[in-house]
Image 1 (cartoon, rainbow, N blue to C red):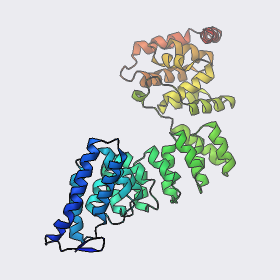
Image 2 (image 1 turned 30 degrees about the vertical axis):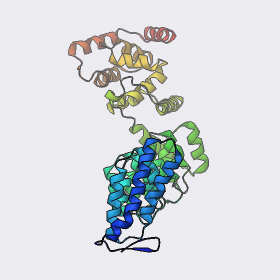
Image 3 (image 1 turned 180 degrees about the vertical axis):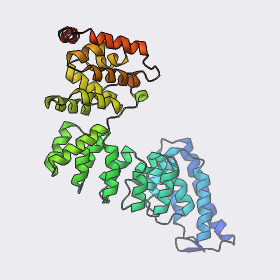
Image 4 (image 1 turned 90 degrees about the vertical axis):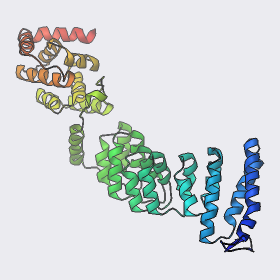
Length: 381
């Protein structure tokens, strides 16, 4: 049965329904035509929204709601994003939309879908999970702002590994994220300072996650972590070791091989503790941590990062030989560093036997004083 207000419209199979709907549809069509003619006139948009609401407010049976939804979707398809967005904003809070119309709006472009995704009381967790899996990150970002979403939805959102989704989850006051969710977000935050800042200030963040995050953030944020959390020095040292182990490089992604701020900070700390020795430098290259090697070698020799990187690429190894001899590196470690540097800097060009012999002869021909003088001139230049 169908009603408009308190007026009975008749059964779905009778002609009364169509007779009652005809005036509403005519009004809707007329409003749409006027709005298209003059989009600057807000009264036409208001009238259009009113006419859509009139159809939705009609008291309909389930079958009749399907028909009304199909009619509205057909009309919505004919209008631009601005009207669909306005419709979404006004329809989102309603608890009587038919599934067809609800899902049409939820799967639309994000400008249209956003309000429905955030505020519709009709979307169930299974609906949200399908949307997360089938749509781009923008839809997930809107869902992450939604109140009281379930554990499975949170997990699906965290699995997207998107910075803004994670940030929206952290800032959502209706949610309490469990430790697994926070650990997953922490794995993203180590690369994004803004997200790390939000995570550090999340209520109830475990000390263990704050410790894991500590060495991946700026000095200023580390200071905040130290003040807010109970941090064990031994645990921090182990976290630093784990962090250093993660200083691996993908050469094709970083052709300039510029060390990160954290690499410089850790190198400075190691240098002040007199820990940058030849074994550490060789082991760093064996782990293919080229940028971290550059940061430490630069700290040890006083050379600029780009000069160290140029030495690693140099055929013959003369520059590396001078620097190694000047800081007291043994011949065996120099040979290892020369060969390992080549695998990082020129992975497609192996060191030949003649080139290795030339590098070793050059190293043997340098005295400590001679190498120190050349290095000093290189730094000054």
